[in-house]
Image 1: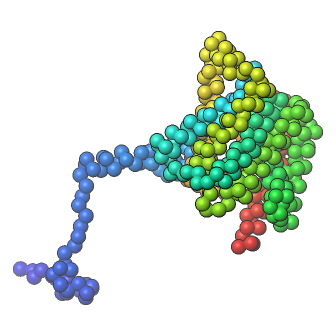
Image 2 (image 1 turned 90 degrees about the vertical axis):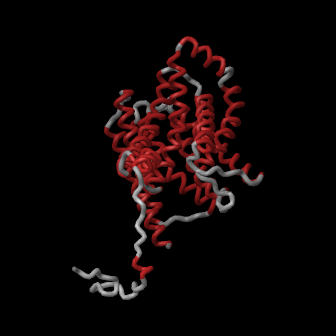
Image 3 (image 1 turned 30 degrees about the horizontal axis):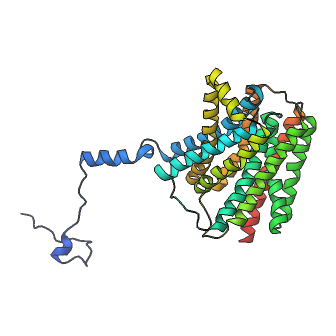
Length: 356
């Protein structure tokens, strides 16, 4: 008969485990099949796909929504004959307000944050006004310019960001950062001079949209800089969207006339237009949602890299769909601008590392 070994007699045992109480091992209870099934169900989509696949799906959704809203705007404003960019932008804002409310209040995608002061309210209102200007200019430019050229102009955002940062906050960048902006400007000059469908008003609207987007990022960092006033991007959209819609309402009534009645009348004779408007407004919200999801599942740097590539992808897709003419000089100018944006991003990263 073999004598049972204790913790003290077993060779190589832990000498501290000598009492009978220490000999008892607390083993976890094996969950039942019902509990395991419940845990699997609570996991949602993350239990069905791997994290890498989920991230790839989110990035693909980000690309589809960003390019999709551009193509839908272009189709509505240029080809379908719906020539009301301000009203269309207001529909985008109402859609973002509605979907944001559902996502935050009901689905609890992110925690709800309240506005704590009148000062914070007016700061968000100022951002909403800049946001309106940028989006309306961008949508208006699509009436006159091809999506490819529109995206080439939009790629110059870093140039305007650097200018506004210096003028408003007196923030100086390194010489390397400023040098990287040279090909950004040079590329758009080449593309503009050789664009077959160049339209001066559309070009100015696209520049205004790009400058407004850059101004918003600088002003947002300046106005909502304190921890008490910082808002999550989804909460900021929840407050900015209805404010932007209210700002746009008098402008659309004054400039575009009785556009709501015209839209309803057209919708009665063409149900496809209702589908286009609802789909367009929904995709406009998905752009903001997927921006948040990409940043959450990757990083802000990844979003910046994807943004650099998005302009080129959108340009290629739009040329394939709308068949707008392009030439070698225009393609070269676009490529030079995108290369400059990449160099600018790398220079900014190196300057931040040096500063720390």
